[in-house]
Each structure stands twice: as structure tokens, then as C-alpha cells.
Image 1 (cartoon, helix red, strand yellow):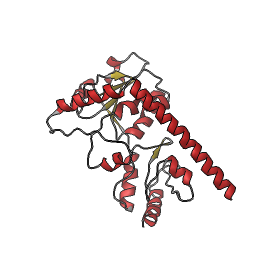
Image 2 (cartoon, helix red, strand yellow):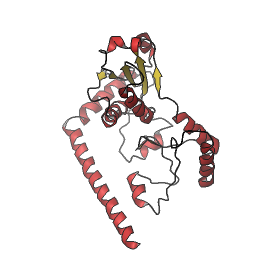
Image 3 (tube, helix red, strand yellow):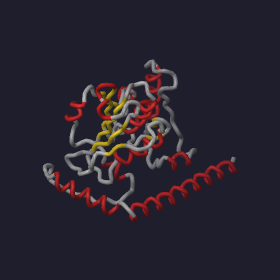
Image 4 (cartoon, one colour):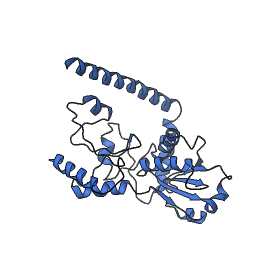
Length: 262
């Protein structure tokens, strides 16, 4: 049974000396709280979800289920998600098979950097985040005007670099833009994420390719993007919003029924 292990892990985390309220471990009886289970797409038990900045992480916890593993996972989540670079030359050595978000900032204590840190904490499994300050980045942005740049995985993508044009003090706007850039239409299926992807319930169109054949991957991505963007993508968005509206209505009715039963 996981419950005693989870309770012991909570006690262990409580002893770790984290600031009060920095880490909260909770549990939900989904048989009693059906609306919560529906909202967060809980289809199996037990399910372990991580929340950062009020939002569920894109990936569930799928590691070892022991007190030590839970404690180590939480410790890892609290480490800084942004790699600091000291010169622009360091950015030339970034991995070309990863997606990157690069922040060019004046200093660490500005509110724009605080926003980027929060977004990075939520999406660090999807992208690698980097930041430079002062002399390290001054050539890339006007003084007092920090910028955020997306760099694609050049090895298997033809996407150009793109600069964020919204407000860097709006968590919602930055989070939305980074999510769009870091979670592409075409994702690689691995042993680690296969279960997660199948649980989304979407049909798969899979390209099987030789590891060294990156050109086929680039072409495949281009075709998928061309087919799904524009009117077809807009229709998928409309369909999603309709489903979301019905989901909210179902949750409201479930809550109302339970209230009446009491």
C-alpha cells in the first residue's frame, strides 16, 4: 500500500527544514471527490501529481515509490531550474537535440527574471532554461529591456529562433508562450514517456526512423506542422474549448448532486 509510505515521506519532508508552506504534500479520496478526479484526469490509482505555481506539472511522478525516492524527488524540484551563463560564447555549446529558452537580463532581482524562474520551475522537463546578466548579455538587449528567446532543437528541427513579444511580468503569458514552444506537435516517444502519451487518449501517427536519419525527422515535423496549423488547428482549438465547457458543466452538476445528497 502506498498510503503509509506517502505519509512517512511527508513526515520526512517536514523534517527537512524547508520554509513553511514551500512544500505541501496532500492526498485526495477520488471516490468522494469525483469532481477533483475529473478535473485533473485521474483514471487510475494511485496517481501522484506535482503542482507548481498553482498548475499541475505536465508529467506525473513515475519514479520509485519509497520514502527516500519521494524525498529526493522533492529536493530535486526545489533546485534552480535555470542554468546561468557567463558569456555569450557558452551559448554556442548548447545541445542541438534539446529545446532552449534563453533569458537576457540586466540583473537577478528584476521582476521579469522572477517570472521566468517560475515558468522554468513548471516546464523544466520540457525545455532547458538559461539566463545571463549584466555584461554577459548586454550585447543582446537594450539596457532596461530584458528579452526572452526560444532556440529549437536544431538537430531535428528547422524552426528559427523566436523572441517573445509579450509582457515578461505576466506569468500566464510567458507560461503559455513557453509551453507552445517547448511542447511541439511532434514529440519523441521514449520508454520513459510512452505511458504518459498513451494516457492522453489521442491517435498516434508515428515516424520510425534510423537514429542517424535526422533529415526525415525534420521533414516529418514540417509536414505535421503544415497540416495542423491554420484552419485545421483553429478547429481543433474550438473543439477543445467546447469539450472544456462541457467538462466544467459536468463538474458543476456533480458537485450540486453531492450537495443535495447530504
